[in-house]
Length: 213
Image (cartoon, rainbow, N blue to C red; front, side, top):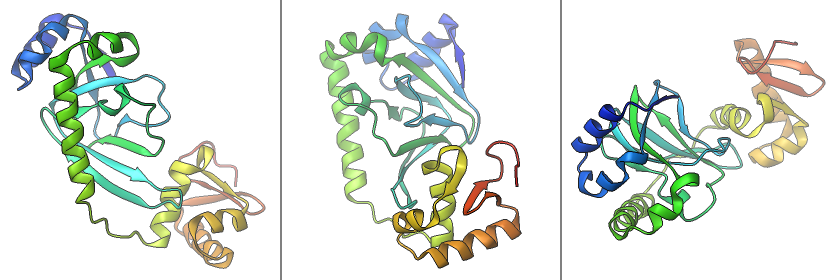
């Protein structure tokens, strides 16, 4: 993620937004945030909270269940709003937003400007409209279940610190499978080079830290 503070660029992109009238009094406090394709825009691991409006590009939002199931919640392009939930509550612990292509967003720090945002009736109407649209989309969601191998990979990537899975009986319980099934999948992943064994009953996703196996 790259921060861009160029005032003329911020004003230009804010003026192109369909929310230009609402954003106008906020523009002096806004910056641009630029993301590469595949980069996380929002995640529970980030401490900074940003209210963002997509200026250019597109993104995908997905939910990671405790059993490693990944469910697509939404997608969005120009003028899609992020951070509306963060205005009113702590960040949801299993929701991730990822840039589907190079992405540029108008952004305002919630931690620095929350009181300013909550004093604006026009802004609150915008946030409420955005939340209502998202609730309607999630209510209509009919997510297809993931295969067990896919859930194991997702679980290791998002739920295991450093991508390391250990204690296979405990983890098999979380994944709703038998330890034997989990071991068989991990053995296959090791043969395919997706994971590396780092100790007794311990495996790490390749690409997460140094190879110790």
